Image 1: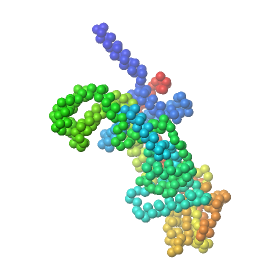
Image 2: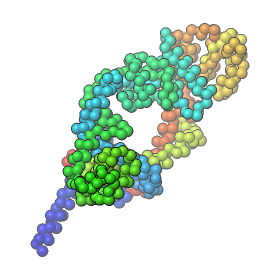
Image 3: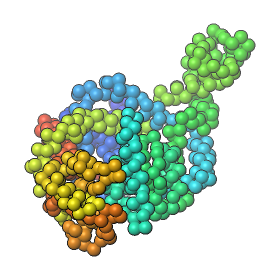
Amino acid sequence: MKIILLLFVAIFGRGFVAAQQDPVLMCINGKDILRSEFECIYKKRKPLASSPTALTPKELATCVDEFVDFKLKVAQAQSVGIDTTADFRQRLAAYRAQLAKTYLTDEKEEEVAARRLYDQMEAYARAGQVQVMHIFKRLPQTLSASRLHAAEVQMDSLYQVLTAPEPADFAACVSKYSDDKKLFWMSCLETPDEFEKIAFSLQKGETSKPFYTPQGIHIVKVVDRKERLSFDDMRSDIAHRLLHRNGHSEGVKTFVDNLKSKYRYTPVQPAIEELFLKGETNQTLFTIDAQSYTGADFNRFAISYPRSVSTQFDAFVTKTILDYENDRLEKHYPAFHSLMQQHYEETLVAEISCREVMEGTVTNEDRLAAYFKLHQSKYHWDTPRYKGAVLHCADKKSAKYARKLLKKKPQIQWDEIIRQNFQTPSGMKVIMEHGLFAENDNPYIDHLVFKKRANAAPMESYPFTIIIGEKKRGPDTHQEVGEALKVDYQNFCNSLWINRLRSSAKVEINQEVLKTVNNH
C-alpha cells in the first residue's frame, strides 16, 4: 500500500509540475489552449510592439482577441470538413515534405552547401539586394496577337517618355499603368531569372528597356542597392532557397550514417551478397530497430529506380532509413510538430476566409457599389482631381469639333469617338489621354487646371491643346476607387463574420496565467 501511494504521488507530482510549466491559458468552446501555444503568436507580435521587451496591455489584449478569432475560424473550417478534402491533404503533405528536408540532413554539410551557393551569387554580382519598382503588364498565354502588339506599343511609348530629356515620373507611371504597384527589395533566386538578370545589371536610378518574363512585360527601375551582404546576414535566406531546390541532397549521407547507429541498422551480409550476385533474394537484407526489410521490399523500390544493383541497394537503404525517421519527426522534434500544426491551421483559415470573405466580394459589383454609396465620403481626396481628358490637336478646327463631340458623352465612349472622327490616312488629327488626374500626373493638366508652372509646351504637329472634364473632390463610382474599396469591403465582411463566430462562442481566459505570458 505504501509503495502504491508513493507511486501515485510521484506520477501526480510529475503531472502537476508539467501543468505548472505549461498551464492552460484559455478555453475556447470547451477546448483548452496552453500558454505555450499562445506564446508562439506573442513572440511574432513582439517585434511590432511599441516596447522592446513586452507588449503593452492594449497590444496584449489585441493579440489575445486576434488569437481567439483565429481559433474560432479554425474550428469553423474543421466543422465543414475542409481538412478532410483531398486538395487540403495534398497541400499539407507537400508542405510537410519540404519542411522535413531541413530535418533529414546534416547541418554542417548544409553549411558547406550554403557557403558554396553564396560564393556563386557573389561571382555573378548577385550577393546583394536591389530595391525595384516596375511597370508591369500581365500577358496571359491566351492573349491575342493584337492585344500583345498593343501592350508592346504602350510599353515602348512609356519607355520613351521615361528616358526623355525631361523624363516622366516613374512612380506616377507605375501607379497609373502597372499591374503590380509594389516597391520591393529582391535578392538572388527570388524572382524569375529573366527579371533577376535585368534588375541586378542596373545601377541605382537606372531604368531598363521593356523586357519579357514568363509572367509578362516589364520596365524596371532600381531605386536603391545594398551591396555584398555578409554570409552571416544571408545564411537563413540561403538555407530557405536551398530547401526549395529540386533534388537537393547535401548533408544527407552524413545524416543517414548517424541514423544507422540511432536505429540499430543491422545488415545481413549473406543476403546482400546473394542480391549482388543474382540480382534478387528472398532473404532479409537488413533490420532497423529489429524490423526486417527483405528482398521483396527491395524489388518494389528497384522497379522505379533503374540503376546498378549496388547503387539501387545504397539508395534503398538511404530511403528506408530516412522514411523511418520521417515518420517520427513530430514525436522527436517539438518544433517540427509546432510548425506543422501552425501551417495546418493557417491553411484552414485561408480556405475558410476565402469562402466567407473573398468569394462574392471582390467580383460582386453590386455589393461593392452599395458599400461605396454608404461610405462615399471616406474616399474623398485630400486635394481635388481632374476627371477628363487632354487633347492635342493638329488645328483649331479639330480642337473645336472634338470638344463638341465629347461634350456630355460618357468617357467610356471617348476613345471610339476620337478614332472614328479624326483618323486620316496620314495619321490622327487628335490624340487624347483621359482618366483621373491628380496634381503632377500630367503637365498640361497641372498648367491648365491646377494653374501650376509646368513644362506644357505644345506637342510637335499638334500645336492646339485643350482639356475637357471637371474637377472632383472625390470619386463618382466605386470603379474609380479600385483596390482600396475592395480591401475595405473585405475587412467589413470579415468583421461581420467574426461577430457571428463570437456570438455563439464560449471563451474563458485565465487572467492570472495571462500575466505570466513571456514572463516565467
